Each structure stands twice: as C-alpha cells, then as structure tokens.
Image (cartoon, rainbow, N blue to C red):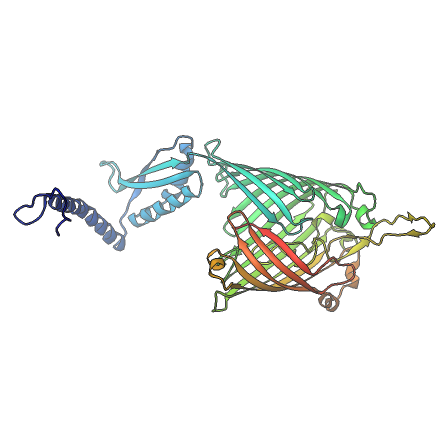
Length: 511
C-alpha cells in the first residue's frame, strides 16, 4: 500500500515499499512475536482449566499500593477467599471473587490481582500480589428534592456528605440533613464498617435527630432521637435494632382526646427483620420483573414501660411489557398490621407514631414502602379520626359556633393497591430525554382494630369502604430527582376524608 504523495516524497526500496511502511511492518511483526508467547500461555491455561484438577495452595499474599488502608484488612479479606483453595481452577475463580470483594469496599479506584508461582523449594504453591489505588478524593456529596410517603407535606430537600476510609478500615461515614417545606427537620450521622471484629456481615450504625410538625393533621409535634444498628445484613436479609426516644406535644392545646392520651415521652426498643428482593429491570420505569418486601418488627425489649407492639407489613410489585410503543403494566399490593402485645392486648392502644397512615404525594411505582401511597389524598387523608377540642367562638350577636375539625389517628390494618400503564410520548425529543406518560388507578383503606374496635370489624365492610382514585400524567427523570406531574380524580371518598381532584406533583430519587 503506497502512502499519499507529499511535497517531499519518501524514497522507496527495491520492493516498492517506503521506509515508513517497512518500519510499520517490522513493528507489527515484533508485536506479533511478543504476543505469541502470551497467546500460547493463555491457551495452555485454558487447556489446564478444562482438564483434570491441578493441586495448588496459596503460599503468600502481598499487598501493594495501599497508603491509608491497613494491610491487615486486605489480607484478612484475601485469606478468607484464597485460604481454602486446593486446585488451580479454584485459584482462578477465587481471584475473580477477591477482586469483586475489594471493589465493593468503594474506597479504591482500581484493583488488580496477579497470580505468580511460589518459591522453588515449595512446589505446587502460588503467591498472590494485590495492587490497589486508593481514591484521590475520598469525599462525596449528594443533593436531592424528594417526596417521601407519609411526610406531612410533599417536598423535602436532602443534603448528604460521605467521608471514606477515615481510619483505614474501609469505614464510610456520612452526615445528612433534611429540611421540609413545613418545618420537617432531620439530622443524622452514620458509619458503615464492612468488617467489624469477627462478625460475618458488615455493621451499620446511625444516630438520628428528627422533628416533625403534625399539628395540621393530628394536632401534635414529634421530637425524636433514635439509634439504629444493623446486626445482620446479607443478600436479601437484614436484621436491625432500634432504640428511640420520642416526645409528642400539643402547643395548640386543641388536640382530641385520642391524641392527648399519647402526649408525652415514650421509649421504643425493637428488633426489625426485613426480607427484600427486587428483580425489576428499572426502579423508575420497570417494564419487567417483580419485587417483594416483608418487614417484621417486635417492640418492647427492656423496661416494661417501653412501647410493646408487633408490626408486620408486605409489599409486592410486578411489571410486564405489553409489546408495543414501550408500553408496560405495573401493579402492586401492600398490606400492614400493628397490634400491641401483653395482657389484654386487644383492649390496649397501639403506639400512635408506629401506626399506618395513607395519603400524600409519593410515586406509586418504584419504592417498596408498604401501604402508604394513595394518589389524590392528602397526607394522613383517610382512616379513623377524632374531633379536636372544640372552643366556642364569640360573635357580635352573642351566638357561638364550634369547629368540626378532626385529628387523623392512623390505623392498625392498612391495605393499598395500584395498577399503572406507562407509555412513550409521541414526540421524539421527549422520548430521547426519557420523559414518558402513564395512567393509573389506585385504592386503599385503613381501619382500627385495637381498643376493642376489632369487635366491629367485618371484611365485607372493609372491602366496601375502600377509597379509590384514577389519574394520568407525565414522568420527568433527571439526575437529581424524578418529577411526576399527575392529574388525579377521586372516584370514592367519605365525608371526613381529605382528598381532592386536581394536579399533584411528586419527587422521588432517580435510583
């Protein structure tokens, strides 16, 4: 192949090739000669792997490149993987597994593992060389505007900072703050330890200070200081311990009798086991798969004055493609129940802060949060209520009138369900931006069982009193949050419910 002509042509040799072409061909031939032994070694390794097991054991693990991370941490992880290796086939598989484990620490930019022969005097042995490059900037931050199910008003701003590997043990510390439109305030700090002493699973601990104003909906303010410790977390399973101090107060002095019984200080000590599996192909717009969550909680460990209750909730969601215009059907059902335990437990009252509340402006699809969401209804917008304390209002003519306002009390048994069809919009620009449309129908109900209310319960009445709404809207995913703009139409509600036909906005996490 001749090179393009230039003003200063390159002289050709007897074969008609230029000197540059000869140099290029020589380099290719040299590379081929260098690559040939590598290819032969790879072929020999493949033949070895497909043949009979070759005995081998690991003699030593050498750590390189770590500056802040303790070598003992990496060595412990490596020996857990390589310690039981007895064949060459197992050694190669263990190397891949070890690479994944180190990357999961989330503190290294790169991880490479090299296998080499052991000392000549120790045949059938191998040395493992682990080279890591630590992250140059071990600090990260996140910002978002979200709508959480059950919040007293829809949007809240969340800020968080992460600090990685402060003590060289792959520890990840974070501090976060939440500020809502209506005096929701939360500050929390936590630590994640992938390895703590001889525990088989990572340990997570978090301290949270939370203040929330429920005066508009339930006539009380809640202050909470809590500690959460993850005792076991592996695969689909999580076991956590919660210790919470709560103080409920009513600065307005108009709360109902049902609310006033719960005012003051309480302690909450509980164990919570969660099983969660999510096989959907997306959290924002699933078009296939399923997800399931089961959470079991028992409270009352410690002092007899601690809140005693048993709480169980389920959440099942599924998605299926309809085969045209990227249309998909999503559906789900959630249920939950809470009951006190102890002597004459059905005549006692469940803790008001741990009851179920339905309503708010959260997305129906995506999160596995239990029976919380019902489009078109305000937060705590349906279920059992009690009249607030009524004060006479003196008018000019001497008449008095009373306020019929009520407090939302929450429920002991809650069920919600939904069906959602998502589809591409007809405009190419919107499709390329990931913006899509959807229509939905949802229903739910909430009742009280404790304080002997179970005697009045019947499944027929429970099913016939389901509230229902339908709607349609568009979903706009962004890097910071996902926005839903929906028009909701209330099909069924009762006189004391707080639901309204109209436009509704919701914000959710993009992941």
